[in-house]
Length: 105
Image 1 (spheres, helix red, strand yellow):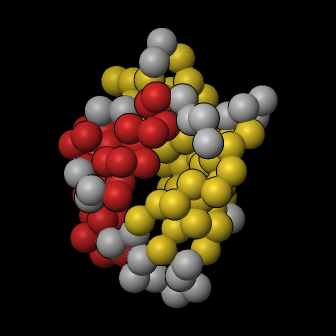
Image 2: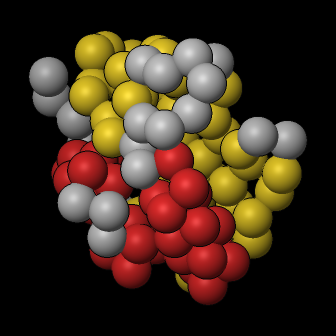
């Protein structure tokens, strides 16, 4: 699968449970929408993913990428009800960074 470099880096950071590397995939003022909550800016994104990593220990296995929609479908497995589940990661990319990410099921 031919993923944009920054999305490949995000998947690697998630699977390594590296919250700092995960946050570094985002622009300074990026926004993440997940589980009904909004996380603004790199510091808040790093705090959110660090907590999620500790709670869910989730890994990502990309299964499809829609280039037109910048949407990654990923089999996500971890310590949460319904695991594994295919989640959709909707990206807005700019200047080599993620500007926004919305996670849906």
